[in-house]
Length: 111
Image (cartoon, rainbow, N blue to C red; front, side, top):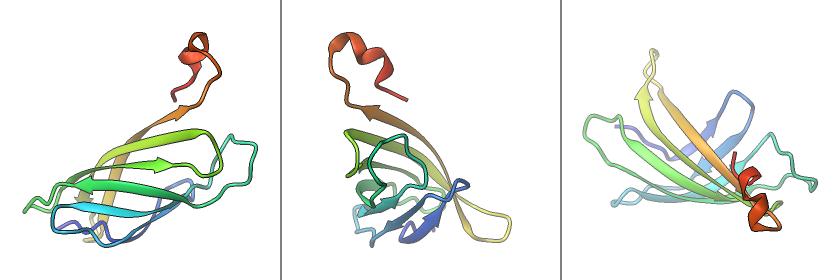
């Protein structure tokens, strides 16, 4: 069974801590990004998510990060897999939405 609870780190050095996953698959935590284009210093930011509690342990999950140091929000979606050494491995994609000043600038707001 994939357990998202605890610390995770990606290949760029960003980390997240997931608090306990409840019986419905909901969780909270904090994301510590190692990369940012924001002008302000990076701060840990809250995350809120949910996962499927599949019996085969290869659950899908999603979470939102509300960046405390910029006017942007990111959403992540992924799946947990069992690695070759028996450890859990998360694979995910993300979208980041930055605040822009006007509707004509909308085209550059999402990465």
